[in-house]
Amino acid sequence: MAVDREHILRAAAALLTRKATSTMDEVAKAAGISRATLHRQFAGRDALIKALEELGLRQLGAALDAARLDEGTAADAVRRLVAEVEPVAGFLAFLVTENQLFEADEMNEGWNRIDDRITALFRRGQESGEFRIDLSPVWLTEALYGLVGSGAWSVQDGRVAAKDFQFMIVELLLGGVRRSA
Amino acid sequence: MAVDREHILRAAAALLTRKATSTMDEVAKAAGISRATLHRQFAGRDALIKALEELGLRQLGAALDAARLDEGTAADAVRRLVAEVEPVAGFLAFLVTENQLFEADEMNEGWNRIDDRITALFRRGQESGEFRIDLSPVWLTEALYGLVGSGAWSVQDGRVAAKDFQFMIVELLLGGVRRSA
DNA sequence: AGTGCATGAGACATTCTTGTCTTATGTGAG
DNA sequence: CTCACATAAGACAAGAATGTCTCATGCACT
Image (tube, helix red, strand yellow):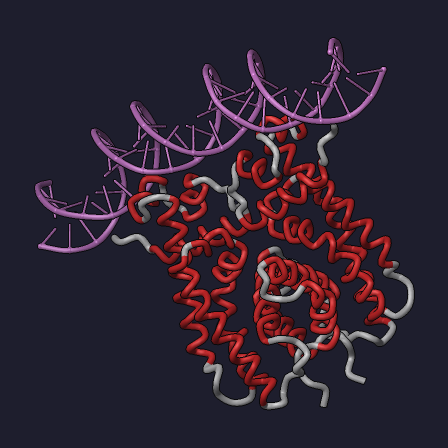
């Protein structure tokens, strides 16, 4: 029976986000497999990390596709984006915190494409007059990463209910905390 | 001449936030000292991490004091908070991402006190009618951490100008991205 | 100059992690 | 039932990181 690689990678992402210095043994235990099997699936720690990046970027790209960022109002696109990203939030948090990886240009390329697509969405919102123009699209993109990461972490830690994930992020990002006068 | 412990810790926080698996040797180089001196100042890796947490929490607490969170409007208090936190943003990012540490109850305690003070600020804003009540204070606190972390990372990476740090975080947090109708 | 002190550089043993291998167990297909 | 295959468990060596030590250098202070 083939091992579920994606399951392993999900467990690894969750663990390594919380404790980046985890050993291969700890990763294997977290995934519920033996170290030998982990090693059979991923040639070594580097290969594991790389697979983690690749799957994360691929799933993130798929989420962006599914969100149809260039359709409808920018605000609705943001809503769809957060909704689609939610299942991948663990990978996103890993990718954001593991800055160490982006020294490899190849991976940087994939990340930049994700970046550009989200930045373009915010820019579209500004040009259509939906979004304010005194916050740069680049910053808004980074802020979204931070909020999604915080959201994923809060849910995982039980500080916030999972069903509120999308609402909280979208509402804060779009409307802010100040009460409309 | 006594070595500048805080300088070492700042360099260590910056490096370890970017690459949590850095060796003691890399940390020493990043701080511009020898591994021997690093070891003389901090008995080992664990001691270094612990000192990092302690200084981070202490400075964060001091920033909260300086921000006078219970004076004036909640919005102004948030502004002061972000302004005071900015110089410590590197430590905050480290503390937020290094969740591994919070298994030690003692440290958890210090972090909870920080948490509570910020949460209380958001609650105050809600009770005074300044802030909307459909976003929980706990979530807003976590979101603030995420935004500050993203801001620090963006500035460090040159994606955003340092002078905009405070403005971007505060404006997004308070007002959101949607343009006021 | 001379003294005291902290540092930098490097050697060294120890410990931890990794990567590979072997063996036994369990499971599914024929 | 038997065979083929994948896995768990553990042994093992190689390599990396850590922690400790020594020694020489540089700097401040007298």
